[in-house]
Amino acid sequence: NFNPAKISSNFSSIIAEKLRCNTLPDTGRRKPQVNQKDNFWLVTARSQSAINNWFTDLAGTKPLTHLAKKVPIFSKKEEVFGYLAKYNVPVMRAAWLIKMACAYYAAITETKVKKRHVIDPFIEWTQIITKYLWEQLQKIAEFYRQMASSGCMSPSGPAGVGCVNAWGPMPQEVEQGLKQWEYNEKLALFMFQDGMLDRHEFLTWVLECFEKIRAGEDELLKLLLPLLLRYSGEFVQSAYLSRRLAYFCTRRLAMQLDGIGGHPPHIITTQAG
Image (cartoon, rainbow, N blue to C red; front, side, top):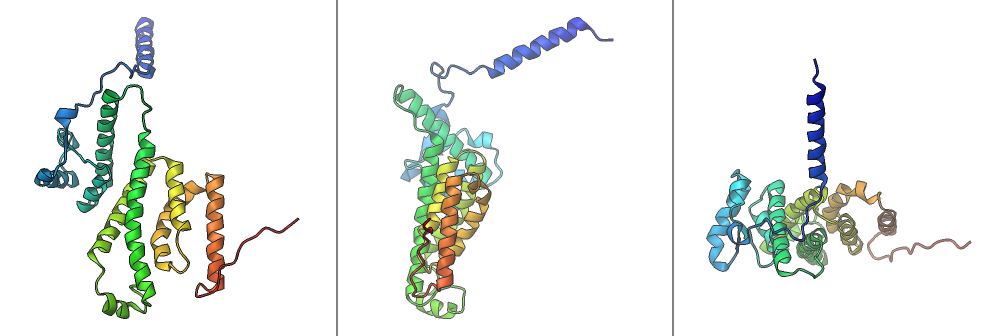
């Protein structure tokens, strides 16, 4: 047997709870929930030992609730990507650290700047991580260009022996840049899928990386192709980006058909009429 009064009472409580959850809080008068002094600490040259231990724990299995009691904040936001790659932190835990940093900077902005325009954190972190990735990519690209200029087109190809004799092992700076690129590119993918990045701006940056590849830089193209394939399903959702990508592909095909050696690339023109 059902009790109509009890059912009505439960239904009313459900509606009241739904109304409470859907009511937006007044963030303008609300104090920041982030305790800037107790939960965060600024990284300095003297705190290297502590920062190493903290990132070791982050890369391990220590609960995030414990790590959240003292979260490191870097003077330059992009420095966090170097530490995350150095300790090979799982991307989900790395994204958590970036979210904590966002909460810290949001609290700082809310307490210090009341009337100024607040910077969109999604766009800001998109610009930060793409700039960092681009810097690592330039280290790798410069190494490939130096090898190509000496006749070593591929480190692992037929000219590999000559390259080893001429250059020796890969320079440490380039090796670190490649490690940083591989890790943070995976982190960027996770952040993209988690909605932490501005989708259009990030996809535009990916496309620009390909558009800036010079003729004959096949090794760089091979390095970037997996990046393009990961986001191929996202490009087709934008007519503008799809057209730019189609133009890039046709231009590269024209270069391949011409034989990249010394022939100038075809200029694709539209037929009159």
